[in-house]
View (cartoon, rainbow, N blue to C red):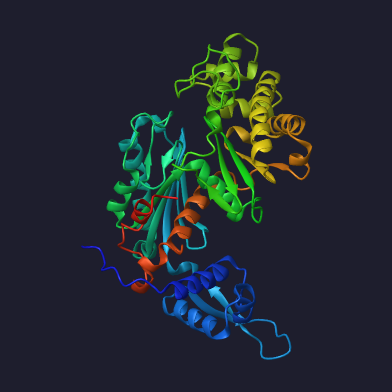
Length: 432
């Protein structure tokens, strides 16, 4: 089947007002036509035309009557989140999550299983596709209304092309066409980003960062990375690798070589791999009975084991987490002084350790940052947990489809279904 014929572009003024009205309704910022006028500054006639157009395309519907302010009660508007669906996947170093979401970012079906990202793209994406197929078989309505796919991977991604670029913990993935493979397989446009960016976006749109315009989301798992929200927008940087704090040099120690090839990296000394390494040493030396039992069970110790041991009061694990927290806090203090966020959200499997890690991070950040930079700064645990990346991947797709850049490519056709070329507009304009 060929690509649908591209229609004439919308006039600029019409497009601007259409996107403004749609964004207000789907964000819940305006629920009635009078509210749309107040928030957008558009006239009643333009509001009526754009609402009618969005209703015609099945994106907006009439709801119940709203409260009266003295005259006729206004009819409330609802965003038709069931008009389409998106498939999303979050690929971590040791696990993968997949889900189906509606157009509001709500997760409808979710599966999680262990996976070694180092096994390579073919094996991992084969499994992702099998789980996607399972979801679509269970939800045939979603198969007919599939609008896009979003994927987060644990490494640097050139956002414009959807390809990982020299990812340290992903051997075999360099320049692999993740986007092209999934777009061709499912006949929908696909977006790929670093998983920390999708986590940051999920927290910003649906978690504790909602409504906060300057945020740093820090994932502490096998690796360490950060996603940046600046002025209410996800900041990817020139090529898409902004926020890679895991490879900031924190010491001159040459004994531990990071997977990126350098020495002294934060990730190599404070990430899940470092915790596992030091925890294994403690178990073999008899300094931790709890970790010795894990090692005796026949499987290797990982970062999550250190977190669990710390929650059970294991003193070695508590100190390992505190040391990691201090190192991470030192790096984040630099980020705070440079970037001045209002909120830092800590997520990832290692971050589930409880208060030990968070307390150490807070102590160092508040001590080493400028007083003005920390005056209103909050440092909190993620409230979304392992849903943050999946929800963020859904928002990534939805926001791109409804963006001013991409909406005119498909709105007159009524759906982006069958369009695999929508992200190519990024390449044409030099990316974001």
